[in-house]
Amino acid sequence: MGRQNHPVRPSGRFGFQPVGGMVSPDGHSQWGSILGLPMNMAYAYGTLRAEDGTYWWPIRGSYETVSRRMHLSEARDAVDFVWAPEGEACDVGPVVTEKRDGWTGTWRADGSPVLATNGPEFRWTEPGFLDVHGELVGPAIQFYMPDANEPLVYTSRLFRGSGTIKGQPVRGLFYHDSMHMPADQDFIRSAYITDLQAAWVAFATEFDDGTVHAGHLVWGTEGFDILLIHRTDGESLVLRDLDVAVRISGDYPVEVRYSGGGETWIWTAHPKGYRDPIRADLPEGHRRIQGWVVREGETRRPVHTEALMETYNGRLTDVLM
Image (cartoon, rainbow, N blue to C red):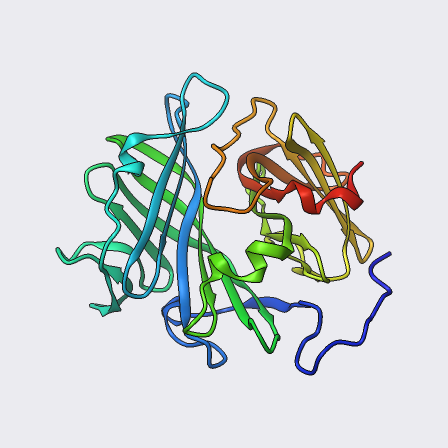
């Protein structure tokens, strides 16, 4: 199990082998420098549902001085997501990143927060159609990629969210992630996206007894793999050198199994589909589809889940079931 090949590489390059664990940042640090690396970009994304069954998966990114585009994935009667027009028409423009009245984040010219946190709470606004508040769940997950060319610190915090989308009350689970890289680099154009990532899911599973399992399951080429899971009913897990097996149907993943250290965690696609529209700005073969993650042998019933799997199918040829 795991990789046994350790080729000779140039000095300062280790085959994209991350080191990671659970950390307790104050939230403000996600906008500052970490290990000498400035914030490259930040994202908020996750599952938010209305009482009538409407399912939204919004995602919004921001650099330090300019916001990134917004997608508001929406599913009502159809089994797959569409991008709601409100998200596609959303503002992309200058922002200021700073601390204001105890909240650190990115702010619009009118003073409203795009994404902001005071530590245990999070605020995300899109004028006219989204206003979401989050309460922190568990520690942060963080991994560091020591690499001479493209060093990366990736930090992720889970929130229990509530608020409104398009005037409807919503509840759910969402993440706030930050990527720290050298100032002249862009995570979206880095090797992590263009060459390495193959099957990555940020997940949160809440069971009917209130237990929450949450984390990131990452597998890719050149040794880029790590499993980081926080559990409210047990010890946290940090594993590397994973074995992965993937089943694809209709050009989308339907099952991904991550195994290592005597553990197997399984992502399964939602039976209704909830496939996200294909993004033309990402490399060939990129697919996103909603599902859930549980440990192999789990018998409890999930009641709230977030687990949008991202794959690059051409990089999975050797691990297909």
